Amino acid sequence: MSALSSLTETRAPELGRDAGPAPAGTTLVLGLGNELRGDDGIGPAVIRALGAREDLPSDVTVLDGGLAGVETVLLLKDAARAIVVDAAEQGLAPGEWRRLPVAAVLEQTASTGGGSWHAAGLAQALALGQALDTLPPDIVVYAVQPLRADFSPGLSEPVQGAIPTLCERILSDLLTLTA
Amino acid sequence: MATPNLRIDVHHVTRVEGHGNIVVDVQNGQLKQCDLEIVETPRFFEAMLRGRPYGESSHITSRICGICAVGHATASLRATENALGVVPSEQTVLLRKLNFHGEMLDSHILHAYMLVAPDLLGVGSVIPLAKSAPEVVLRALRMKKLAGDLCAALCGRHTHPIAMTVGGFTHFPSREQLGELRERLIAMRPDVEATVELFTQLKLPAFERDTEYVALRAKGEYCYIDGEIASSDGGALPLTDYRKVTNEHLVRHSSAKRTHHMRESYMVGALARFNINFDELHPKAKSAAAAIGLKPKVTNPYLNTAAQVVEIVHCSEDAIRLCDVLIKRGLTWEEPVKPARLSGEGVGACDVPRGTLFHNYVIADGLVTGANCIIPTGQNLSNIEGDMRALVPTMLDRKPPEITLALEMLVRAYDPCISCSTHMLNVRFE
Image (cartoon, rainbow over all chains, first blue to last red; front, side, top):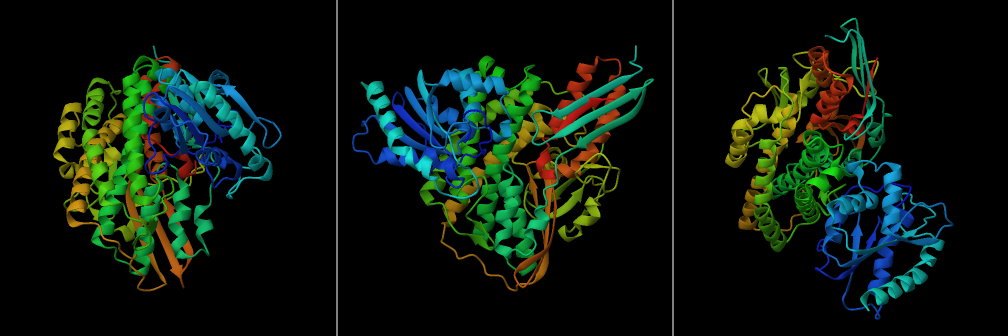
């Protein structure tokens, strides 16, 4: 969980062994989060759900970024377009989500001061990517409100329940983006 | 003209891990107070270990730190193994050394590039650095990613390793993975060379203060795991005598304990290791030291970051060597070595990125009944204060913001992990 008011994402390059940046010029859907921390696992859960869809456009790469932290910059660097899914404390009802242009996330990061590079998360990775001028031109963030992000695996019912509509909306984005 | 009265109060120093304050009080040109206050809450890891099965110790104590998780896990395993009569296999020792290099690289790259370089390039953080010199920041990210991938291949993941266990590993990288890591480490050489080149150009502050340097030492290697405790003031002690070196004591302004050995304070970390183990550095690391202008004994604490850069060269070259050795001898699936007994006491020690780390456990019938962990940053705190007390009087003709920056850079040079020691930095001029 990281994107908005919370900057608490654990720092760690805990990617899947073969996880690497998407091939240059493709569309990347990147799910972030720690599956051992309750609803923080929404990013990886959406990636699994999308990966199982037969109507996923063939030129789209879906990637479980885990706790990529600041290294998210490298995962996003070569994509032409990107969609990022992460849990974020936004004061909404659990399971509610917002589709945010990256500018909104960057603005929020600047206003909250950034946080520590020892524990960098998505917000800092996006700010660093912007400074490096390596962010894909087209990038949106799906920020999902968690019910709980405590020390236990598994999504809460409202967050689990958000996955189908979230996937539909992301697929509609992908069809528009790849059209 | 000297400033007769000066009050500095940096309430939480930035670009260090954890929370600490710098408090300086000069009255009528006399230094009255010069403290590094540690204001974090104690974390009670030692108490958490009590009553837990010995096999959980490394998993619990790796949570002390998200940066030195492999270091804590390794020191913990060595303490348990020494307590229970476990002698790890040659393959385990090689894998642990390779894993350790991954963490050392990750931590040193973060510190040198993200935390120290902005000071030297006159910017406030890595974000403006990314705008003015994107190739420098992208290089750091590339190198960091490889270091993290190395750890993930060996111990399942970097932060809080899962495959390291008492007596060995529960997972092994494939020959192909080792070969791929080796190729990537070789491909990283130009980035390592560029890092050395960068630090030959950057000017670190001039300040000399001789102190005692303490590091682990072992014959025939640049020691990070096991060995004996060596002092630059002469002599060495076995790990079991660690308390004779650390002599922990409390001070009023700090929630972290302080240490002293032969002098009022001593320094641990990359510079201490460089001073004590220079002869064992990889030849390329020695060449890097010569290029940067480092020759033991170095007594400028600001050069700790330069010593870290020398270690980046050493660790990347030694990691290539270890990959070669492991590939040549062939990796075999080994069951972890079983304990010879279920009760005993043991000390484990590692030189982690920030210095010498000790874990000491008492185990009875397979359960931990007593634990003591002494963290590098805690050992450096008194020495940082000694540097501050020597530095401030030489700077009283400067403007307070300049003095504050010099003090913050000094603290950052030590790469303190205040959360680990229990505890960050806030400069307050009083």
